Image (tube, rainbow, N blue to C red):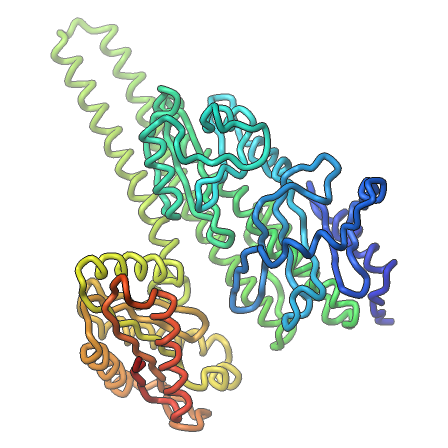
Length: 551
């Protein structure tokens, strides 16, 4: 028979315990809060009662201060690092939680209190016998997690503390400070820096979901002796970072289990499959996928999860391919060096011939380094491109909009921002299917991309069926012309949509906002907001139109 889970006190505690015990190497405590039942924590804590403290009064206090991350289908909250109320040793933690009731997010929620000490231990498991290590900073260059010896090396002596945050704004190494500034901008790169008078490689990569940055430090002396060693260290660190990012998915699963107390076992089965496949992917098995049993929200979740798994698998296949190529090059170079060294020792050739051999070796190593650079550039491009449409993604759009705004403010030149989406796209998806909906979005993206002629014009997917265009040095009249050309191109390349109430073909609605950036003008947020208002006006007037925001 199908059983429902009653959300009473005992069952909630049992659910938290079951979830906690199902996680390999849990890095903190799991908690549930509601205005009716108060706070439930597992593993349980007893010392607060001895201290006479009421945790239910303390926990909601810092929730409004946390930073909100919004995706198309969930709301996840990450708090700033702080001293924990859930740990007797006052360890530093980051609280990650998600609301059960979206309309009143602080009435009931579940989450994880992630210990920074445990996070440090996770990264300490990376190979450190050759002086390499990993660390994490936030956008303000606060050191969040690093092994103990790394904290001593990275932190200025006057700012060192054994645990908690350390501000890395003036370490005493000029090159390292400049690199940290670039790191805080969220760009991916590999550079040579001097730390404590030793030259090292510093690779870093943004963790977009939580606005942190992952850094990996490897001594140059170690990396140059084995070029594949540097590549493997960076890849292992990023694997652990991806596991950290999976905490948000675990929270969503916790919500599903608690709310799932009122669902039948048929609905729970796809979620159990998602959990099983997630563990397989975490263990390195990228072949498994979730079977789709329905076309409802659960089926959509499984479909999205499978697409995510495909992208992760493609990324790791790409990484492994590059790694094997570099390993082959390195092995070949080592054999040639050994062979030619023997030839030099056993021959009676003069110094000039030996010098020519060394030049040849240097040239071959330069070729290997260029291949590594090409691989890194390919990875950086993947981070900027939307996986479905092949145009810019939301993160790259935001980055370029900030750059163009700053540049055009200095030049006192205009900028136009266009927001548009596909009219009645939900009806298209519901009737033609999600695969056809994806094809529709790809066609719309390519039609718009071919309309833009200037290299500085940028189009990207803003989210779902919504797109955005950035037009530097463009006034209102020029922006309108671009929109009209897109409409004309869409007519010449029709996409059928017999379920649309306004046309038999796919149509678009546009919102345009043009402005001169200046110290007295509104900011980027208002530029986007006003374009969105214009888009809403087009929809209100019947869709398949464009509207210009008028101040």
